[in-house]
Image (cartoon, rainbow, N blue to C red):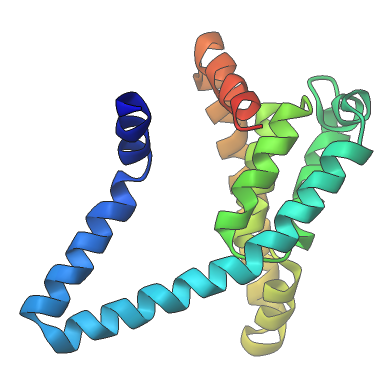
Amino acid sequence: MRDKTKKLLKRYRVFFILAVFNIALVVFFPEVGLKSVRLTWSNLFEMLSVLPPIFILLGLLDVWVKRETMVKYMGEGSGIVGVLLAFFIGSAAAGPLYAAFPVAGVLLKKGSKLSNVLIMLGAWSTTKIPLILFEASALGLKFMLIRLAIDLIGIAVIAYFTEKLLSKNEKEEIYKKALIRE
């Protein structure tokens, strides 16, 4: 029982630290503290409204898409198809960046190449289709195309070099952590 409590405290230590910090703010600086508590609750409810649909889609992806299919299209030998699919998944996805990490975990678990998962994360954070359309209308087509080109190249280069710089043991550890989260 004591080990479980220790494990629970360790796992949620950031939450507990922030809760104590919020309480201290309320006690010593009531105006700032109450604003902080309101923002915390607002963010919590926003997360709770976004994550359940993501987890439902992840469950469906996990059940419906066979590992062999994922390996074929996004695994080690997928080539440009895997890269393009990773860019598409990231760019077409809805939701904030924190919703991308469970998706990345499922992709890794299903056998996707690490660089393709990194590309998906990069695309999720910078090349969302609604953002691109907004940029084109608000800042002009030329700006949007230049930024998109730089982003696409940058994401691909960063993903490629990140995968190459990681040792085999580090990659195995990443894949192992994705499997543990089941």
